[in-house]
Image 1 (spheres, rainbow, N blue to C red):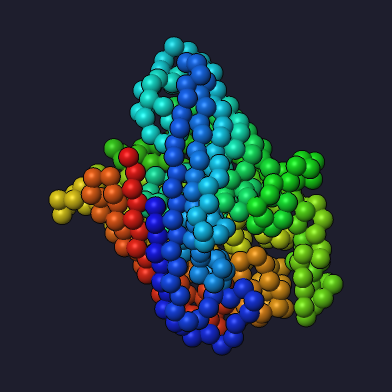
Image 2: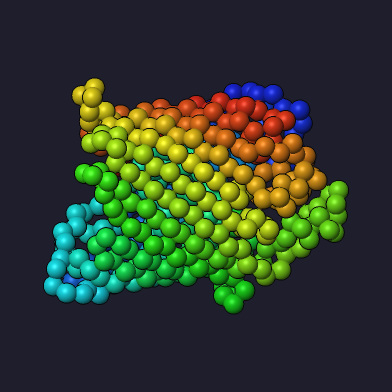
Amino acid sequence: TSIGDMHDGFPALYSGPLSLANHTEHEVSITTTLFFGLRLSNSTQFYFNPEIAGGRGFSGTDGIANAPNGEMPRITTATPKPYIARAYFQQDFGFGDATEVVTSEENQLAGRRPATRYTIYFGRFSLTDFFDNNRYSHDPRTQFMTWGTMYNGAWDYPADTKGYTIGGVIELETGPFSFRYGGFMEPKEANGPNLDWTIKNAWGHTAEIEGRYAVGSRTGVARLLGYVNRSNAGSYVAALGQSPTAPDVTLTRTPREKYGAGLSIDQDLTDDLGAFARLGWNDGHSETWAFTEIDRTVSLGLSLKGTAWSRPEDTFGVAAVESMLSYPHRHYLAAGGVGFIVGDGALNYSPEIVLETYYQAKLKWIFFTVDYQYVTNPAFNRDRGPVSIFGLRVHWEK
């Protein structure tokens, strides 16, 4: 997958250490993943994904909380470098004799699995492989590209800089309902590349219940997620108490918890049109640690197949995301504090709103996508922007 992005120049009353540059920027990212699966027994599988990634985000991937390129969490350098993205085991335990057919795809071997089952996953992976799924907005390689559209922006999920962690997931699949829970490692530093092995002081727990339903003949899925993390994070309130005019959240770091919740819904409207929505919230008191600096979020979108114009494998999508900060977080930034993604040196607060639309054309194994994003109040600052971002994505898979 290669994504080329360009944003135009925009008005800005001031700029800070982590501001989006208000002059035109052009950036390109590239990622390549190989998917290997090995069946060790009828119920045991092993998956291994080596990956190569390189590129840069605008202004060092700073200045927009709902960042425009979803492939950027996996990239730390402009020069493409190889690494292990995933290496994990999957063990099924079946209940009853009923089975279901599964097809071959990324990290899924074709065959049969128990229809009612209990599954354990353990190893290195991304939490988004198992949680916060959505039929219409979950994969920045073929769907919407902004961070807060592909995932729940208020979910500060445990991950290293590239978006992966080590841990385990248990999943109960019953047909109309699924329940999954997992425990994971946190990075040593905010948005850091290395995981923290002092498990007693650094961990993340996530749980989700998923229900499948139908409205008439139209199917839908709702997923309710909750999480609590512990990391060596700073406190926005403590930082302001230490220095009301030049706060530094990193000087207040000590093991502390952060918790939040999210809701993801996708719903078929017609044979070709689907809708999705997400809500997210976290307590917003402790430092953002792994994903992005969003404390509350709401997103809505539509995805339309191109059947009406004789292009059934093409997709047109439109979405809107509103991202917000907690009171301690916004006061910290207004006093001149910086996080790891946003920090303009001052803040005239307003929710950050991103409108995104894309058209994807499929030609055999290659997907070509044109994407447009309109960002108001980048980094929650009404003194900067709005910004227009134009993207071109080429994705190949076989």
